[in-house]
Every structure is written in structure tokens, then in C-alpha cells.
Amino acid sequence: MTATARKANTEAMATSVNRIGTVVLMAHRPARRLDTQRILAAICRHVLPPLAVLIGLLAIWQIACSSPGATLPPPSQVWIDSYDLIAFPFFNYGSQDIGLAWRVLISLQRVAIGFGLAAIVGVFLGAVVGQSVWAMRGLDPIFQILRTVPPLAWLPLSLAAFQNSNPSAIFVIFITSIWPVIINTAVGVRNIPDDYRNIARVLRLNPLEFFIRIMVPAAAPYIFTGLRIGIGLSWLAIVAAEMLTGGVGIGFFIWDAWNSSRLSDIIVALAYIGVTGFVLDKLVALLGNVITRGTAKN
Image 1 (spheres, rainbow, N blue to C red):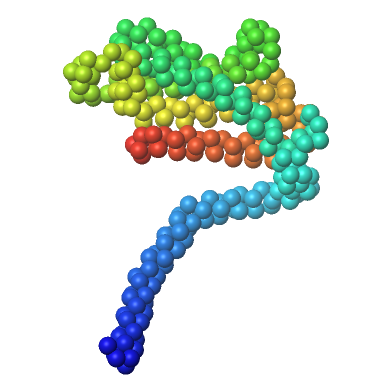
Image 2 (cartoon, rainbow, N blue to C red):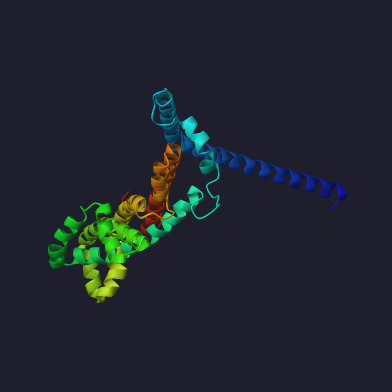
């Protein structure tokens, strides 16, 4: 091959490579543009509506509480009074002089223990009630009566029994959050298709194997519905219990701020409580969607 031919061949190959690169770039550009459009569309659907509502509520609050006779501080005053709590959630200057993030974490520790116990016991009892007609007839009326007792009504008995505020608060969380777990698990077990039970008989599964391999996976959407309700009740119960039992949790902070007439601090603490409860609910929902592959009932 002559030098002229080699040069022509090289130029042809370079031209082909350039054309392929151009085609690849053109193929990728619409995909990137499409991804950007999807992100913008998701932001418009999920972020802008609640943000607009929040801004509107803050504006109404600012106007309503800016008059001389207003008893509640407007958002601008809350920002001025509680700037440290808002801007520095993790400060730590002593046992009681700590940021709200630390107080939330302390409360979450109690919630984790109480709710974890409620989830384990609740799923087991719900499976028993859902699987056995006699258990349902005997236990369901008792469960329906006990679940209507307000959370704080259990606090005096728990204090008398445990003689300590921390286990008393954990017990209040447990007794408050267990009922939706039991009820939803029982409903899920009762709705297991008969074909699943027939397969278990064919495979000669013992009760423990049936519980692990058939019952729990089949009733998982109902179980996680009960867990989502239970985690919300747990968070409500711990805040209320800490107001009376003391300590360094977020509930005690609100009660202490009320006694000191720090209304702005109370408002900031309520925002922390609301955001934390929202995150807890979404975490349990996400876990349920992952485990049940998106079939959990929302």
C-alpha cells in the first residue's frame, strides 16, 4: 500500500470515527434532556406545592401575629428569639443546655426500644389472632378495649410498676403502638389465600416454617401498614410522656420552655417534632416497599 493510499485510508477511518461519535452524542443528548425534564417535573409535583403552601401559611401567621395585642410571636420574632436552636441544632454546653437535635435523638432512643418491642410482640400476637378462630374470639375484644385507653392514662401505672421514668416512658410507647400492629397483622393473616395454606400442607411445613415462609411474607403489606400507624403513635406518646416524666428529651424541653414562657422555643421544637415524625413515617414506608416490592398498602 502506497503512502497516498495509507493516508486516504487513515482519513476515511477518522471520518467514520467522527461520524460515530457525533451519532453517539446526538443519541445521548435527548436522554439527558429527558432526565432533566423528569427531575424538573418531579420538583414541580412534589416540592413546589408544599413549599407554596408553607410560604402562604407563614405569611398569614406573620400578618395575624404582628398586631400589638397578639399573644403568639410571628415567624420573624421566632427567628430572632430562637436563632441558636434553629441554626445550631447540635450544640452541647451541658446536661440540659443542648441543641434540639440531641434532644430528638434521646427521645428516638426510647422510641426505638418501645416500638421495636411492640413490633415483635404485635406481629406474633396478630399472627396468633389471625390464624386461630378461638384466639380471635378470646383476645380481640380485650384488644379493642385496651387500644382505646389514652397513652398518658398508662403513665401512673407504669411509674408505680417500674419506679423509674425511663422504663415507664418506654412502656407507654409499647402499649400505645402495639395495637395497630396486632390488628393489621391479624387482618393480613386472615386474608392469606387458601392456595398458600394448601401449599404449606403439601410441603408439610411445621408451624414455625409456615409462620416464617408463608404467613409473614403474605401478610407483609398489612403488617407494614400497622407499623406505619404504630411509629406515629410512638412518637406522639414519647413527647407526651416526657412532659410529665422529665429528662432531656424533646417533650421535657417543651414543658420546660412553657414554664419559662419561651413561646418561640416551643414553636421551633414543634417543627422539629413534626419533621421527625414525617421522616419516621417515610422510613417505615420505604422499608415496607423494599421488603414487599412495592405492594405495601400506603
